[in-house]
Length: 274
Image 1 (cartoon, rainbow, N blue to C red):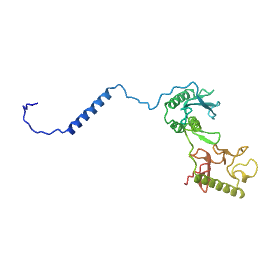
Image 2: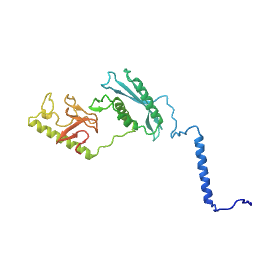
Image 3: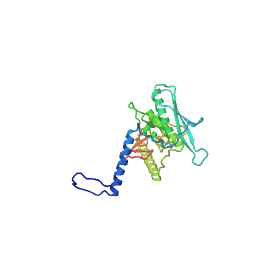
Image 4: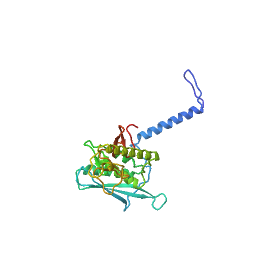
């Protein structure tokens, strides 16, 4: 087709196939962007199937008794069984309820359980809830629960219960302590026992002795059939430590003693001096 040119030609260039393809691609990108901007809202893509609540769920109830108030809290976590009867069978948390005679914290407990239940039903990796809850601190101060483990807040202890439940159903696993770590802890305990015995033999009494020989008071962390008031029971391996021990910020157990001028934990082996 002939094209009549009425104006003076000042320059020219040859349009190749690559230039045409580049222009077509740019036009397509601009068209897609305009269509996306014209939509009323963003599309949320669900990456899992929607699971309806079964008529019956299996679960566990945990009793939580804190020094914050008189009545205990009862935490119930119900699980759903996925792929039942197959080799891929798995229990996953589906909902959580907290009940108590104490109504002081009713509002935020109901809100917390509804949000947590929604996260459970959403699926995916729900173990992040444990770290988030255990990191909550009460501005009024925390407390020591039974066993000598420090809890910075009530929410943190709820997170500890969720952690125990996730471990029970296989979603979380305790990291295995290496042989070197076990040997280090045994060495620290033996060294402290020897230091304590030496002090007692020199006439220096460590701690308050209710009865018996002072040298046998903290000879080594052990399990006792009848717990002594001088000991601090530690959850986990059932060991007991001196009442003068302070809290370890790593394992939250009252097991830090001074050895050779350095703060050392007799429960996890942590040492401030490295």
